[in-house]
Length: 59
Image 1: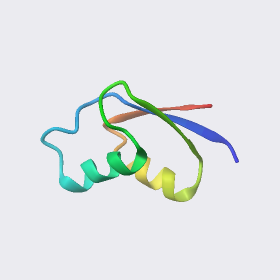
Image 2 (image 1 turned 90 degrees about the vertical axis):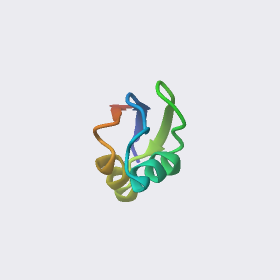
Image 3 (image 1 turned 180 degrees about the vertical axis):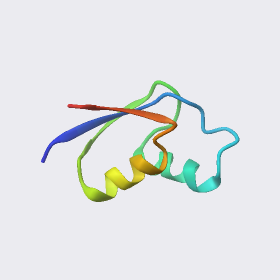
Image 4 (image 1 turned 30 degrees about the vertical axis):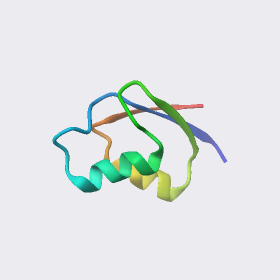
């Protein structure tokens, strides 16, 4: 499978609890942090939920 790099670009302060938990589940703990994931449907769904807080690039 292809890999995707997810970078947090906005803060999770004043966001809904579900969005904070989604960022945590993705492994993002602060602005500027990057993680690499496989492009599975579950990961893409989580990214879609917090797309206004993250930036994605192909690995």
